[in-house]
Length: 212
Image (cartoon, rainbow, N blue to C red; front, top):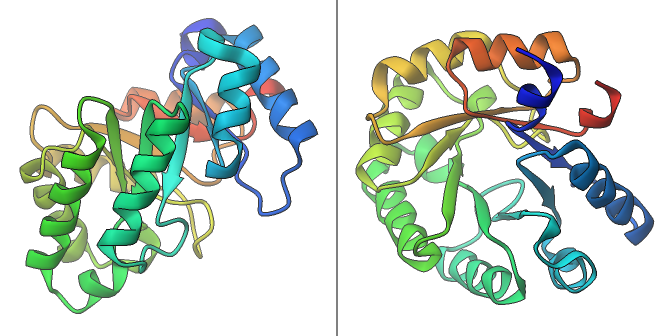
């Protein structure tokens, strides 16, 4: 896989709490030059990115990030504002408290509600694998599929660990045919990105696209 093909699968990411406009502007210009799939950015910068770069860059943002335990109504409000400001893709964090309580009905209900709010735009569901048992990961694969999300995503990048190839292999066994996989967290080299894509990922979340 050449570097251009590789970069077309990357969500070029800057989600640090202290990210400045200078950081975001640089990210967007790199994304345009490198032709990455999108930029993944804090919600507070969506409107300014949209006004500055228009349709030159595809905007992805995060909801319920990074801990996931905000209430569904708050997540829906975040989604609506993000789309209004110009986002085209939403990466939401599931309510991990509900997952650990094995209240899977509540988890699925929330993902379905977010799916409805996102509409025809892309929805990725971050399940934060580092906190989960294999049984919980499998159940979330089933929920993400049933709720109609576009992607299951490994990690926020803010947990105790990031992506792992064994989780991608597990996902492939348990997601439906309409669900794609995004890996994120700790993927910093072209070799690592290619390994995840070869394993079955469609997207890679990384802040290191410009280093390739």
